[in-house]
Length: 166
Length: 166
Image (cartoon, rainbow over all chains, first blue to last red; front, side, top):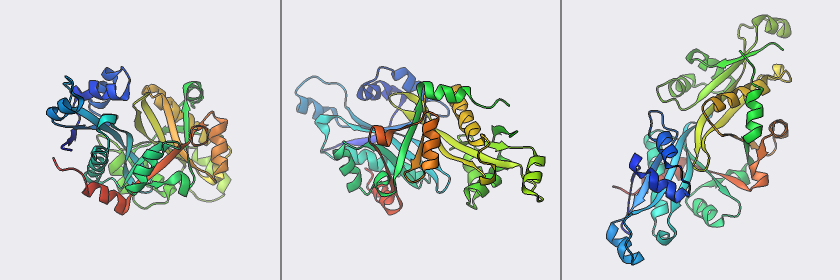
């Protein structure tokens, strides 16, 4: 399928938040398109006529997927990228768009001298696990035993409240 | 023990890289103390006389630990923090310095409206797993089955080489 991957603009936030299925595109816009953005985003799009034919309906948006990532840091290896979301609309899967987005993120990473691209995937999500494994992704939870720990809500507040005062 | 936690400065990079046990403090300095830094860092220090008494030797550095973190992003929840490294010199463990650093990172996160603080820990590292669990950290690999996937080296290069050309 004919598609292209390009950097998202502020105007794409509404489409991205529709795909994430959240209503807060203004917050996405604030956090991703500011001076020190919290993330970067690529979008995949196809020529409008393909959608009109495939869906047989009046559908004005040619946006069919996105990849949202940010820069992280390894104290052993240096600059790294973390892929938070990779999404392609179900109707357009199986056309290499997901791979195109993933490869483009890797290309962005290389251009910024990143040595790692990391992501998390759920145990039950075997299609995604297989997809990443087929592309050379190592499952470090399986091979090295890395666990993923989160503090949020009241637990995060409790920590912050206990911070030493200077 | 009397200690304080403060934001690291460019001058601390040499001490931080000594603790990480890498030799590239100039790269740390470049990546962490620039206009859009790849990470932020806190350091823990104690009054010099305590070290002189405890170690019974001439030791000029009062730097005893650090916490290195960066900002990440959840498309479901928004701004988040990731704690890459938390380290306290072995001789000074058990004095609340690790907890002080962790809590200070949480406080930084709260001040930046972050809703999550995340980190990864190895399966065999039960002291760290117990430490985080005792502070309210949820092990999402255990409770939700999150796996951690990495692309690096040739696998990352292969992806980048396959990126669609615009």
